[in-house]
Image 1 (cartoon, rainbow, N blue to C red):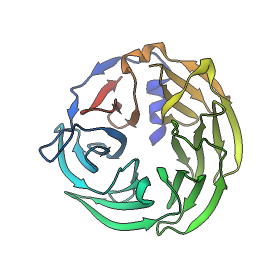
Image 2: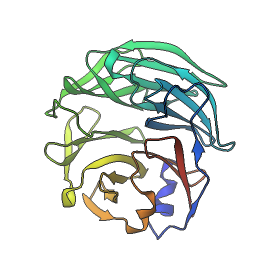
Image 3: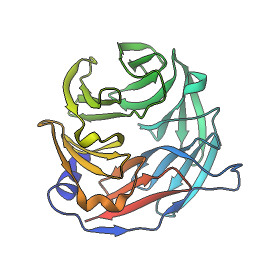
Image 4: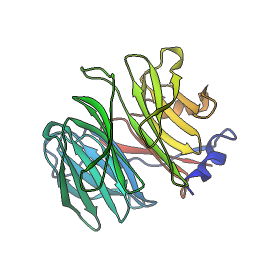
Amino acid sequence: MWWVCVSVFFKRTPQLQPLPHIPVKTAMDREDPYLTSIALLTSDRLVVVDYNNQSVKLVNVVQGKVLHQLEVGNMPSSVCSLPGSRAAVTLPAEKRLIILDCGNQLSIVNTITVHGRCEKVDYSNDHLIVLYTHPSKIEILTMNGGVVKQRDLELSKTYMYNYLSVIADNNVTWIFIYNINESRILRLDEDLQEQQVYPVPDRAKPLCVVAMGENQLLVSDTNYRHWQLDSTMGRWTRLKQAEWLTQADRMAFCHERNVLYYCSVRDAVKRYAIS
């Protein structure tokens, strides 16, 4: 049912209604928030990673506030939602993944040690998909951390913009990663084999990607532009009607509410209703 949004967002020019931002700065914070990742748990709750405050924050989007905050360790980076009101979070500097219960409060229920700086994480078909930078590789893990598949990647050894996005439907999983050195997006299958390569247009530097529907990605770049990528045809279309997004560093789309949530790093989760 994730694919319902295709007809809403891409088949016609959307009508955009700004909704109030959701502030995420709390009394527990020692520094201004620096949001590095966002994931939807349900239609009314999401989690964000606050890098500066070494925390994950549970947010109620209906009430527009942070419900709970949990300090998780040094430099958390990425979060993805899991079944059963859970989430996985990467701690690259500690080479660990943590699994959180996201009920009324956040709590750590499992810790997984990995072999490398685990920058990004996503989930599909009872497996974790993890992107590393040192060494550059991608792995498919069991929920207990066992390595099912691994592929070495020729990515930069220095800081780079990179992302991991997973589209899963009818037990078919597509994995998208960005190689900044060669300005291309790679599509991998569940065996981590390269299926398609998408050259990036107009010197765009993709910063964030979100699955908006079957074979459809919304890509935000560092030049404040937004693109539709048809992953079947390899066709890029610049969405001029999306200029209102400014620079979206992290995005999540809720088809039930037709709301796009995004973070521009600091202080708040921004959102727009799409009709």
